[in-house]
Length: 237
Image (tube, rainbow, N blue to C red):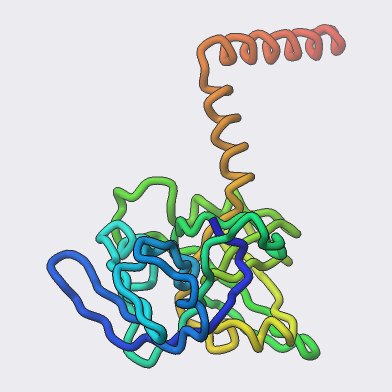
């Protein structure tokens, strides 16, 4: 579990494309390796990855095919910058929001404008290349609400606007955040990882299950029929 508060901007040192997966090595990790252990979780651009090797200056991760299908990590090249965050402990303040590191999909920057010292970004959620990946693509826009949380490339942000018809949402990056994350490097056309707020996702899933239950459907049908009957009687029809 993470918070979406980026601890360090790392740099991609190497990308090894192996049989069906990818080995990624990140350098410029600051002091993040000081308390690291093999098997620890690190969020890389918001994606929860497992440390397979580390030394004082680098982390190495293995990236599975499922992760490559849902994220932008497969497009990383040596020299690219990435947001890094260690998994939370019980002593960490929750300055952002609860982030799982399980990327729902990716979005494209469709607008970038200055608003005083801040930068406003608009993103459009794109379909994944693999159509068989469930609960992904533009349909996840339903979990995004104005003034709610969204995690973009591992950064916890507040949603400033949503358009459900076009599967777009907007955020604003204040000056301090600009200095701590890679978002200012993004331009129109670039892709970013997104994770929707898990709280809204879980509530939506539970409501869907409840409404699809046979008993619930019967009760809803009866309630609708009764409401229609009352309306017709009120109009003497």
